[in-house]
Length: 453
Image 1 (cartoon, rainbow, N blue to C red):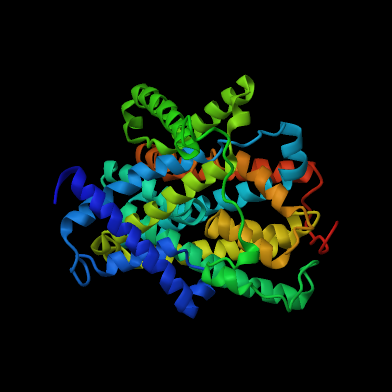
Image 2: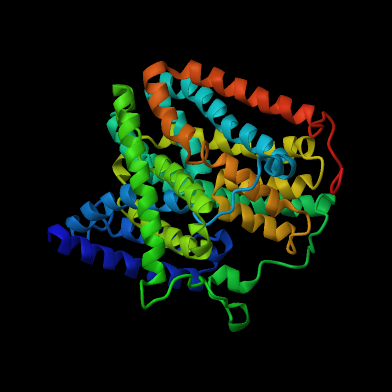
């Protein structure tokens, strides 16, 4: 089936797979323990039914699914900062500065470790391109959405396996973040590093299965415009569309600057477009008719369908061809993140180092939601101020890393300038942020005590 009709039905089939993924999350203990989102489960169901395993689904469905991720990722990133009140710089630095410094060291450290492993081991022995190391940060810190958005970049650079490997990296990252994160938390409990954790209070069952009981249900959005005029969801999607179009204009400008930038993706510029639209809306008072929860629903809906379609349409043959260098890269990244969370966090956070370190660990290995999940386990009442500090840090961090401009440009920069300049620049930035941490009295060689320093 071809054309718009085929696209419509392939989208409906994806919706059914999402429901099936949610059903399996309810029924299977393993999925509950790993906190796998239904979208990931749905994606692997689709992959299992596809041409590389059972081959029972029509090929045209997978041809459609393979195109969704490159489009839906722009909706996700355009929605990030819409409806947000942008705080003053002093507030961000005072409350979120320690987490920002730690996050930059942890995030750019992924590049340093991965690129060193690539240039010293993987390229000589497995003949992978030098930008292969970027797959770690794209999948771990960026997540499935970023990995899906970068698929087109890898295709333009002549390495189509990069898209499949990025998606698998993101999947490994989530499983690693939840599984190892819970192990780290249990060790920290025994060592007395968690100041507010009730060791007997586990994860609520409703969170494991993903179904809210009546006393936990809540409105997911608030209407800010009259439905007689326009549906509130349509209104907010229109704002997202404006942000994407602004990003599209920026992309045209960026691509015109140099042939090197011809592969620059749209999604980080859609995020910048969202910031521009939000800033203009705050100035003109239009923002008072924005509902952040509605933007979150649009973003979440897009991300669910994006992740499911991207995993289901993975080029499994390309992944298997690169399995061994991929496994080595993943092991290097996991080692780095555990080292940062366990050994460096107690030296970079003058207060509540474990709560802040484990939150950043969850985000850097999985996604923001996993970081907040781990935080909820160790700080169930949010008494440590970590959630606010993390949110402020993300506002500065995300435009650059974890799916931002640096994530988008790193493979392009390495392809045209080589790996060593990238490693050197990354080391310099890490040293700068370590220096800022020292100057502000946040970093010290010996560990800070748990709780307030």
